[in-house]
Amino acid sequence: MKYISTRGGVAAEAFSDILLEGLMRDGGLALPETIPQVSSETLEQWRSLSYADLVAEVLSLFATDIPKEDLQALTRKTYTSDVFGSEAIVPLKKLDDSITLVGLSEGPTLAFKDMAMQFLGNIFEYVLAKRGLRINILGATSGDTGSAAEYALRGKKGVNVFMLSPYGRMSDFQRAQMFSLQDKNIHNLSVHGVFDDCQDVVKALSNDLAFKEKYRLGAVNSINFARISAQIAYYFWAWLRATNTSGQEVSFTVPSGNFGNILSGHLARLMGLPIRRLVLATNENNVLEEFFKTGIYRPRASEQTYATSSPSMDISKASNFERFVYHLLDNDGAKVKALWDTLAKQGYFDLSDLKPEFESKFGFVAGSSSHADRLDTIKQEYEQNHYLLDPHTADGVKVAREFVEEGIPMLVLETALPAKFTETIQEAIGQAAPVPAHLADLHNLPQRVEVMDCDVEQIRAYMVANIEQ
Ligand SMILES: *Cc1c(COP(=O)(O)O)cnc(C)c1O
Image 1 (tube, helix red, strand yellow):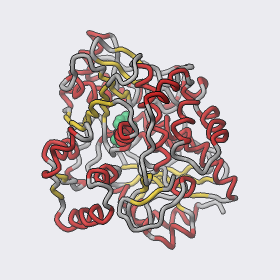
Image 2 (cartoon, protein in one colour; image 1 turned 45 degrees about the vertical axis):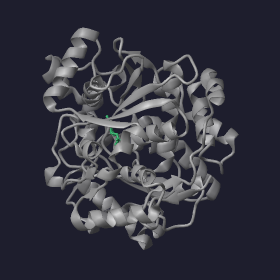
Image 3 (cartoon, helix red, strand yellow; image 1 turned 180 degrees about the horizontal axis):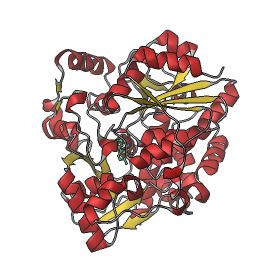
Image 4 (spheres, rainbow, N blue to C red; image 1 turned 60 degrees about the horizontal axis):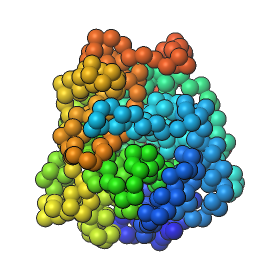
């Protein structure tokens, strides 16, 4: 399997090569040249696999340059009950007769990003050791990516992490989680700006090819295709647990920001998994909802990005969206490039002529949720179903209810646990969310962070001064 760029401008590369890079050289994103197909017979054979072995099966279709035994050793080292709290790794939790949650937040940072990131930490170490290389991870986070990356990469050989986060925009818990790490290879940079500003700095430095090559910059944000591919596995897992007959359709609802999680669902569907609908849920930052309802994509400036009570979805320029558009445009990289040129010039693009295909061909529908919806949903589910949702998953449940269909299981991805967002839980139900015992002391730990202006040169200088050679 080779990987091409969404903008069509580079030669195809192997999985291990794109693993260590961020954007492709032409500014596009890596995608597999063809989509591997999984037959219904194969799917039925996968029913008895453990989570770790299922991930190895799925990944072996994408990482064809790594021996399958090695992939299996890596997934077995990653997906353990010690790290993910139960043998199931991803438990399905029935909320009521129409909705089931897919428990993706049982890992060390209580959010779904652990699912792929814990694997990424291990496969990075494996590939770097094989090639005798070191890498410097430069990333931007609105909260959960950063902590998931840091917990996955802390202490890993050959890896430094520089993580940019928007100053004052993360929850106390997210801050405590990230900034309390004392590992020497972890650097937290708190930047005056919003998430998109942080992401722009990452893009500026990664687009400086001389700098990128000299310091071997890598990425762990959701543009890293290894993350996308590891996430595909839990769509398969959830389908296998929620159905008992071949061909039975299910729908998924995905609380979305950067379009990474739902893109994995989109790929699972293209691989042949019987997914009826992919329901995209946004918060007040509803650029993607607007696109799926109108065909017009109009990213917003950072001043127009609201700070909401589901902060990990406060994104108005979704990096991974370009990968979906590539498929929408029949894999035509030149068209994608032209479209992004148009976007840079006029601030939006219009694909309304393709709108009928969004659902009929790709299964996509969308909805959004406001602060009031979020609080109502948390309160209602707590009172009626005795389950405490985190604010992001609550956005998912709110939107999912608008798309439930008779006879089609609706699986909502649980993207975080409520303990991370206790202010909002307090507001919704008048009491704090329970904190897992092993995290009770988190807020008392000393924190380590550098506060900086949103300035590419200042951030570059900090990195250069702090890279361990
Ligand atoms: C990152 C995140 C999201 C959004 O996922 P994307 O892959 O960026 O669409 C949703 N909820 C939570 C809790 C997250 O951490």
